[in-house]
Image (cartoon, rainbow, N blue to C red; front, side):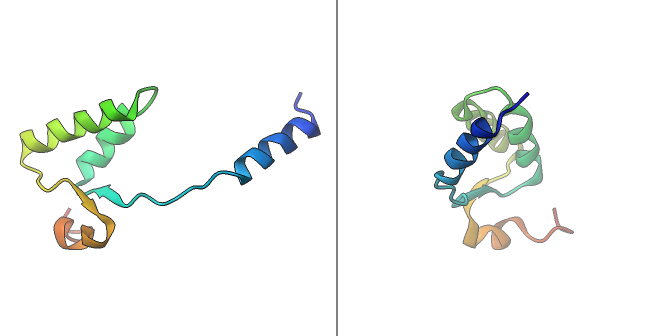
Length: 80
């Protein structure tokens, strides 16, 4: 059973994290799905490599874009 000091230690550690939103995002839904599946129990560099290869194979370029440019590259939800 979890004790109060252990929970507080976890809360303190989580509070000290500097979480920042990603500056670049996948521009196509299939890449988001691949990222979700292949990032489970893997190094993220290998996940990026899988997504890069798939994007090039399918012609989904550009595939990793700045958040500010996402709407102009990927289109809206209906277009996806």
